[in-house]
Image (cartoon, rainbow, N blue to C red):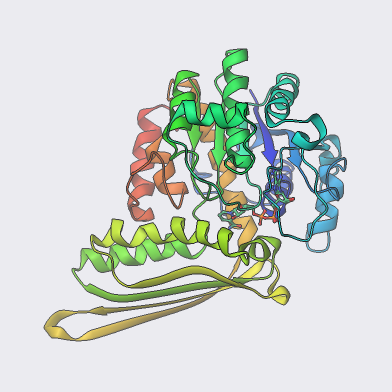
Length: 389
Ligand code: NAD
């Protein structure tokens, strides 16, 4: 049985995912960076099949995944020919690339309304028959609705200011599940509030489907969470936390727009109070764009705390991290886990999954916990549900 996947946003993360999964299938690389790869899961990595891809960048729409991959990672990786079978389709834009230097057109412009664009997606998905839809497009400003009626009215009114593209995709996934009776998984690894939007979680619950999110936890944030847990367990009192990231990929370019940076800041900062129990002064932000660094971002961290006898200690960490492959590795688990869980009757959202994989785990108001704890809790949960044999 296959895990049929549709990707929304054919950027670096989605491309590393597509290339990496195909290379693992061919036995070219080991599944390093896939957290649960060593366990016997009901779906193997070899079961993952990419059946569709969406973008709004005119440079990508109409090209095959192979062409997109050759252009973006062809100089550093061999690109499997199997990716020639999937062509990037036009998605819903709703301003998500506004202010950035790309030539863009959304389905809503082509068809005249957001509702018509959503209906088009549903029709296409009825043909493609995905089990899992992965939202991995550019970070966009987005606000939760928390009320199904308000979300549906915004679609009905074609309120392009209020609606985010991620909400439109999530709603299309819900409609596709409802109209086909298929149990669908929507995985949101961008900062938009989707799994932590009560409206979306409720719709997915009603359609016996599952939404996972929000914002994939890779890089410095999960490491900070684990370091804070270490300090909290020893009752050391944290005086300040500074953490910044500088990168040269288009994700960092997009984050140089203040409204988008704010979205990330929100999902990154929630770890401090949740783990320590108090809001230690902190500066945790994706800080800037520096083109020569490319996808291998520079991360730096400083944590300062009070220890026994009133003395003070400090920690400094510097890293260079391949940004996009880190999230692609997590996606390789998320799509398999999502499909296995929804088939076992899990609906709405699944906190144990989100707590490990996401920076701001749904449902709304859910706590962030150290990843080292979340990992073992998730392992128990997956065994209990029969997802890991
Ligand atoms: P990217 O800029 O390389 O790719 C984003 C792609 O989305 C582009 O091809 C763009 O044209 C497309 N896009 C934009 N709006 C769209 C829309 N409305 N519909 C369809 N496609 C659309 O970025 P990336 O490095 O691949 O990151 C993707 C997302 O993943 C970002 O939102 C980022 O914040 C999130 N994320 C990344 C990491 C990581 O890289 N480690 C971690 C957590 C979250």
